Length: 169
Image (cartoon, rainbow, N blue to C red; front, side, top):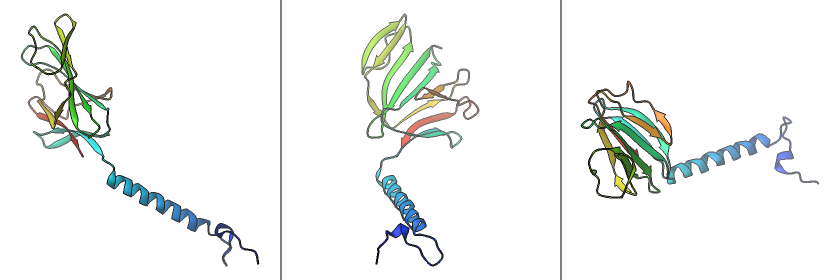
């Protein structure tokens, strides 16, 4: 008597065990994926309009991802760019700021350098922030970039709305 592998054996209806093996393989992939999803840290960057209690934007992020908030300072009317980075622990780090101002600056941490006339870059700050909040401008609107991609906030926040950026684990 010759013994055939399971996938070559035929049942009474003429079909082999291949569908059974495929079902078991698909089930194993689903189980392994579920276990991975349970144990793996998942970070989601959330931009929320706290005034309207609505989520403007959310996206899965990982270590090294960049977030830039670019705006016009309401006092001086000069541009500011704040740079945040997601660290290996799914935390948001305030990394650097670039601004034009006729004065010496407002941040004491980091390394300060003049990169153009009246333009200062303060980098290597690496300060952990739970969230970054700002009031959405009436006249000038904030611009949000995530890994270099522009996220349009127009219509999702209006002048005076409190907006928060944070990471949800």
